[in-house]
Image (cartoon, rainbow over all chains, first blue to last red; front, top):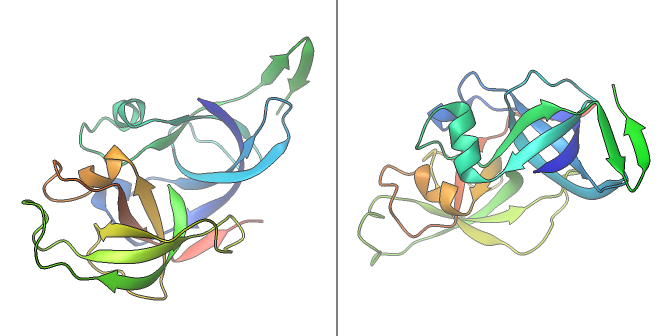
Length: 96
Length: 89
């Protein structure tokens, strides 16, 4: 899993049916220090994350399919948590 | 998933069984600012409607094949949606 920050939303009306009524969020990916890496992912939201939230992202197909409850879903990136705190090498960052 | 711009199409008459009728698009992956990022790739069109110039989102790896009618096919990128708008406040 990786930590990211919600930076925006993606709106799409013509898509694979699995995305109907699902929120797609743009997430900037963060490093262990909470700094922006310059990379991003478009993720399916499963926890009602909001703009600016620091989130936990699964970028792996089996886990993603389990979250959306469809064994054939063509989805790989899913937001599975809203991060409150990250502690690395004794340094703690709190979010929210 | 990542953003990409459709830049062209690929036509192949002879294809692996299961890929009949699947359209292939040349897409340029984009960074979060909409600028080209990395090399263009060939992606199967799982929405069967994307055309050159459109901004789409693509899924990579094994999950790409799952977007197609026959999910056990050798495909590593698929277009799964056409983007109307990216809202980044």
